[in-house]
Length: 295
Image (cartoon, rainbow, N blue to C red; front, side, top):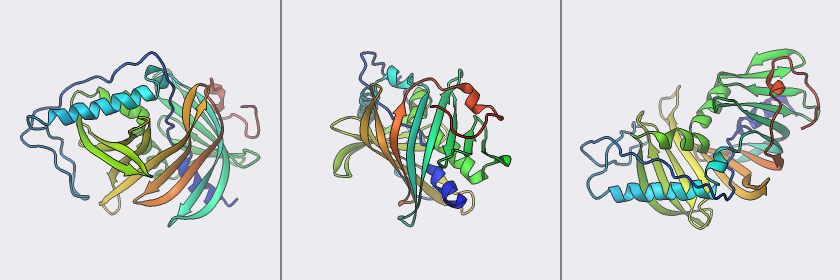
């Protein structure tokens, strides 16, 4: 496959996985009220900054509904067990799209390793020989081939770390622990012929993310956030849609993840085999050899 196709396809590979498993350990997200302000939140225009505001008296019920929906999602995902799921190895393939038309397919293997501080690193191996590797550390992304190492394009690195910031894991571990977080319950809507509850979270930095939760299963269906385009200064929308949940080592996991950018489908990832198990840290060392090895 042409390297240009591989690079485009791999923009979707490192999607943070949502996974679920039922567990008796069901902690609740911490509470915390938002700081006082003078007016209720209003839906911003696309090009405007989002301003964090405190609900007027009586609107606290919506915040309670939003937190209850998030608690139900968290419990459906397995609560603390989901958060502790740790390392995994994933084999599958991805498809890239341009203007909703497919442009290529690539097989890949992803090694996801959680570090002691709670952050993680990813290794993605491409081609049947697995001789093209994309390695993401906590601070950078590099490509490794027989020619050596070189940084991945800045745009690709920025995208990877931006999506981690708005991932379901980061929402649980960071966003929902912020006492200044504002929650907005958007009511119900229909997504892919399924009824969902729309929940918007706004943090102290005026950043927002929306999570659409399927009402019947309480599993997440979509994650949506907007960010300012660094070149054109308008707002871009990044959307991930999760479907086809399978039980993997006791944890239901989405086998299909579809990504949209400004309303256009840009990538799909399909899981063929996956295991939650420890990953050898040596895989992330700079001089680890290329080529096939057991996983």
